[in-house]
Image (cartoon, rainbow, N blue to C red; front, side, top):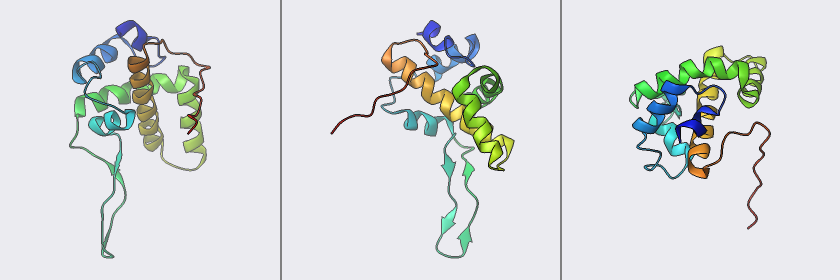
Length: 134
C-alpha cells in the first residue's frame, strides 16, 4: 500500500506511512469525505439564527498531525500533480487566498490517497472516473 500511495505526486515516504498509521490502513472510513473531516480539512460553519453569522473555517479540533503533513505535501503537489495545480490556480484566479487554495489541494490529495488505498491501483494522472448509472 505504501508504494501505491507514494505513486501520487505530492505524497512522500513519511506522509504515506503516517496516512496508513493514523487511519488504520483506511479501514475506518467508507468515503473520502469522512477522511477529510477526520483530518480537519472540511469547513465548519459558524451560524446561529440571524445574530451569529461567522465565516466558515477549518476545524482545529480534528487530527492536527495529519493536517500539517498534508499541508506540507500540498506545496509539492501544486508543482508536480496536474489536478492539484489546476485546483490551486482556479481558486487563486477567483481572488481567494492562497491558504484556502492550499487547503483545497490538501483535501484533494487526501481523497486521491483514499481512492488509491481502496481501489488497489497506482496513481494515474489521466484517470477520469465514470459516473454510475442508476
